[in-house]
Amino acid sequence: MGTQESRETEGTTNGGTGRRALLGAAVLGAGASVLGLTGTARAAGGAARHGGGLKSLPVPTVIGHRGASGYRPEHTFGSYQLALDLGADIVEAGDLVPTRDGHLVCRHEPEIGGTTDVADHPEFADRKTTKTLDGVPTTGWFTEDFTLAELKRLRAIERIPANRPHNTLYNGRWEIPTFEEVLKWQDEQTRKRGKQVWIYPETKHPTYFRKLGLGLEERVAKLLHKYGKDKRTSPVILQSFEPTSIQRLNKLVDNPLVVLLSSASSRPYDFVDSGDPRTVADLITPKGLREIAGYAQGIGPTLDLVIPKDANGNLGRPTTLVADAHKVGLVLHPYTMRNENPFLPTAFRKGTGADAYGDAFGAFRTYFATGIDGVFTDNPDTGLLAREAFVNG
Image (cartoon, rainbow, N blue to C red):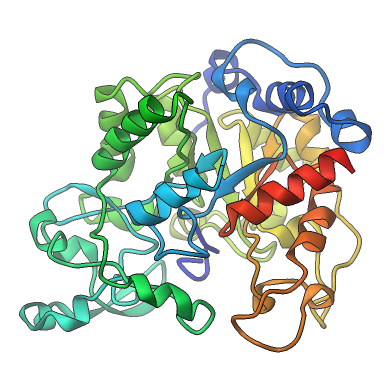
C-alpha cells in the first residue's frame, strides 16, 4: 500500500453487510478480551458480534506493511517471512498487479524500475516507456508488458535506499512473488507455525487495468475460490483505493473488505474516470461512511485523516473519524507508521538523518490513543512493542 497519489458508481448491494459480520465491534470486542484492554481502547470496542476468524486478531492489530519493509526490500518473501518472524498479526502480501499473460504478481506499483533490477537487463531496455497511470505520466517498465516468465528473471531491490541504506544489502536476493505463491506460502507458514497466518492484499489501479483487459477483481476471486479463501471467516482481507473495486469484490467473494482513503482533497481514480465529483472528504462524512458500510467492513485512511498535521508537520487535534467510523460498524486500519525521521510527525523526529530513527514509540502511542483498530507499519517489531506498552501502560 501507499498513498493514492504516489502509487502512494456501481450500485451497492444490501447483502454485503448482511452476509458478513460487522468487523468493527467483532474485532475490537475480541481484541479487548485477548489483550485485556482497558480505558479508552476497551470503551471504543463494545461487545463482539457473530462468529468469525477476525475475532482472533489482537487490537490494535499490527499489520506488516509490504512485509517488514523497514528491514528488507518490500513485497518479497524475505520481507513477508521476516514480518511473521517479528510477530506481525497480518502481512500485507501484496499489492497486486497483472502480467501480460494475466498472472497476478506482488509489486508496489506496476512500474517496476524502482523496485527491481530491470534496468540492469539489456534485453528489456526496449520495454522502457511512458504511460499515463491514473492521469499521471509515468516513465519506466510496467508489469503488464512482461510475461510472468520474464518477470521471474528479475530480482527485487530496495525502493527507498536513501532512507534504508542497510536494506540494499539484500538487493537481488529475491524474485517477484505471484499472488498464487503467496496463498501457498500462507498455508505453509500456518502449518509450520501452528498459528493462522493472515494476509491483506490490495488491488492496484483497478480501473487502469480493466481498460487494458486485465481486470483484477475476477482474477483475485478465482484464486481465492481455488484455495478456499473466499469466505467471511477466511484469513484474507482485501483492500483498494477505488471504492468500485471493493464493490465489485463484494459481489464475487465474502472476504472482509476495506476501502483505502488518501488525503481529504483527493479523489479516488475510479471517481475521476466516471465523473463522480466526490472527494475523500465526502467519503469520511457520516453519510459517506454509512455508504461504505453497505459494502465493506473497514476503511484504511491515511494517518493524517485521523490526526491532521499543521504546516510545520506537527500533530493537531484528532478528528472525529474514528468515532464516526465505529458508529457505523467500520474498523480503521490507518497507514503508514515508519521509524525513520522523515516519515514521523515533526515533534517525534530526532536529529536530521534521513535514515535515523525518531521517537516512533511516542508516535505509535499517540495514534493508538485515538482508538484506531490497527495500523500498517514497515517495522512490525516496533509496532508490537508499542502496542504492549500502550495496552499495559
